[in-house]
Image 1 (tube, rainbow, N blue to C red):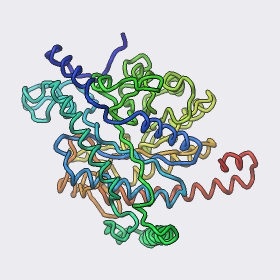
Image 2 (image 1 turned 30 degrees about the horizontal axis):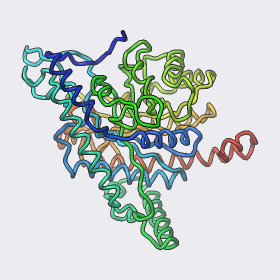
Image 3 (image 1 turned 60 degrees about the vertical axis):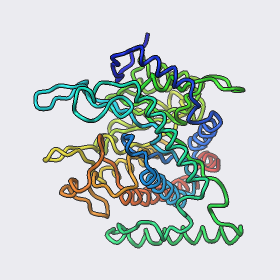
Image 4 (image 1 turned 180 degrees about the horizontal axis):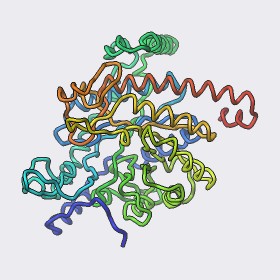
Length: 455
């Protein structure tokens, strides 16, 4: 029996079993052919042909399941992806951190307020945020409600995409007020003009609009934290071998539940989905290699993504030995940078926040470190929202520490707002273009590198 960390303690086991039995009979939220399509695209990213953009809320709430918020998150991710396509000259894999991100790991089992101790809030899939005994008791009925909210979200996203949402062939309509305050204003404006001209050229040549040319692929992801919920939606499908977790295309294991002998690793090694693994301190190179071998025993490209989160101040010391160990073991992985989590800080007034420049600094260092090891950054993982919240400090829009109280909404971790996220996409595209140019320079001096680049 493997130990399952970060699991709630339900008071009524009979009620829990009844809910799980009902969940197991409900239709899956995603399909196995969508899962296999994502795995194939991630395999291309491993070879350098695509780039993974993964983003969304740190923790969804049931109240967020309304059209304005869903559309705002989808729109900012689509806009960011278009900027990255232009900057990198690569196709972008769009993965939303939503339609299931309703549970969060916590550092403590309880929370104390005014001398009263209650179970900690673990996300809307488990209990409720209000500070009362009734609200904090884990409730199995919330598993069904989480499934329903996820289904509604996925259905709305699919309808928006099929309808040609966001009018991406007119980037001049984007919310770009931050550009005027940026030292890179001219470069941003030139990039937007270039995107518009490129898309207009495509429309002229093909005689159709961008939204009519093809359907955009979009995938869902969440931390596969609550094993009861994940297992209830895991099943075999006709004409395929193995088991699929069909409550998301791309589940991941968090940094707190990646124990080699733990129940999460045991569950994830048994599913056919592409999976991601968050790696951060404290972790050893040998531990990472062992996790790779367990989670991807056939060394299948696209199966395993390593989402590294070391922080701007620590990445140069902790990341290189891990890259070297994975390479020496011959493991096929996609390197994806999560520059959010280890750059979290608490202000003097007790507010949790992140600084734009620290997030960018970790991204820049990840590019350089991987290139120095003859590898490449294949993706990014952001906590973000399309709304104009004030949770992270910095960026051209000028959010200051004093602004944090103006519109701070997150129940757990701070997110980039829409302007900060789009600006980050422009800066990331700039990094990718610079990295591509340096790769081309290296290629001209090395025939072996030339073969790799040509793939």
